[in-house]
Image 1: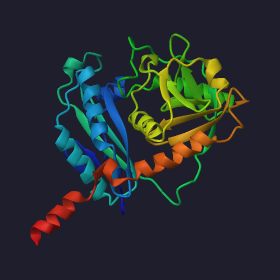
Image 2: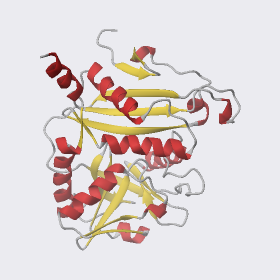
Image 3: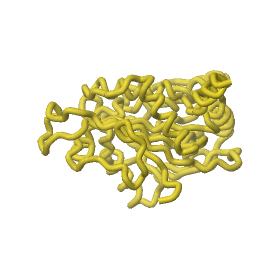
Length: 306
């Protein structure tokens, strides 16, 4: 197929249509693996080091051996972008336990599977305001930290999928999930923030949330802008009565929450705080100082030749 995207698969770059894994791979059979979703903006991979570090932390927690070191996997990711001639992209980096048998025991998986997929993201004019989404408080609780902890970014997203099914039936864009104690946790793939009287609040990490890289960088942006930020347990009442609310995530960046359970948040549109931090965060994501150049190695080669 002409101009078919190339996928990194266990050390080789293969056409998308030929990128296949075994039906005995434990990533398929049991969701046994870890992943990262990463963005590239104008040839700069945003917060790449932080994503690679988290990948290795997640893998270490589930005792999954990654066959490449951090530099090797970084180089492979950048080369995937170069081979596909991409500057603006969403990158999915996946490591599974690899091929085993039909049993659940991971000891029988000898070699991990590494996959890197890069898909183009169309970026036209940058919106001046974030898009607005509708939400509901889901009956599906976030798995607790002593179960399939969402602090670990694994391939098992059934908890989020069940909540999304509920949101689909309710006719809203996204669910808001509560933790096992009944406090606000996060969205299916995004962290959540609320604004009350100019103070920006987000659930504490004790609420069974993913330690989002976008979340962490966003908190520092808010502090740089002079906003008071608090990480605390947030109740459903505090969410529904907030002045403003929004999600953050790698692919979503920042999206404003217009309604919760059909009740408007603020005026149902992005508030002044949300619009201001969104504008600043967009600048940060596109700053060369915030990431890793995709084509730096090629420039070094060119200089060496001359």
